[in-house]
Image 1 (cartoon, rainbow, N blue to C red):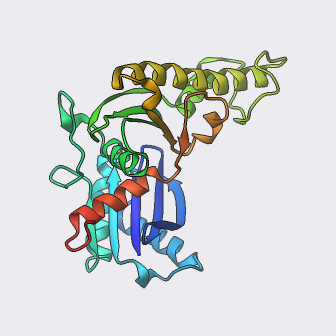
Image 2: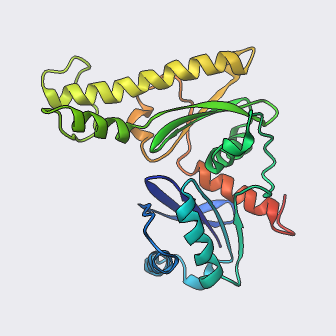
Image 3: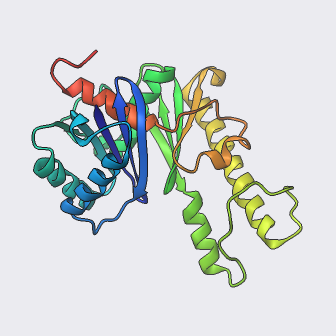
Length: 264
């Protein structure tokens, strides 16, 4: 089985593939202080508690990280604890099959390239990937499968943290849909501003991107992913598909491209 690891700024998502199907998955906090040994303990604990597999079932590892310090420890964990397992880390020199049409391709986060590959594989191009993570990222993929650019906005949780820290009477709230857009109390007013505000942000950026990306904006498929995506899905008018494991799918594809005898 293939273990895929997507290290984000706030959370790390792990998924196990049997063939092209995710059969097990976990979500843990990303802790830059965690050592390679600690990562191995957490990983092995998750694997051992699963009734679907044993530790020896892991035959390959594919990972990407937006946190350099964690990437270093992940690399050491793979070397020390899974030295006999083929590991592919998304970094310069790794075959992705995604041409990057940016002023400086090295600026693009590995996870965004991985998402672009998965989007083309699952839905074709042109496409826009909206990833609801620490930041909300918008990534545009051409009809030819090229990564052509994107946008980055503050994420939902970042915005809530900033609001609660700067507003004396504004506290953290449960993120659920309020009864109405016109709220009758402070809690629901915050929920309204966050849920409907971010939905409007998504629709506005997607509309403008689609007009630049394709002659016919209706041809653009909009794919949402990320742990916070379900908060906005029902309120957005522009999202066509929700794929919670989009990054993991892209990691599987890159592993196959970079492992002899597995491509195609």
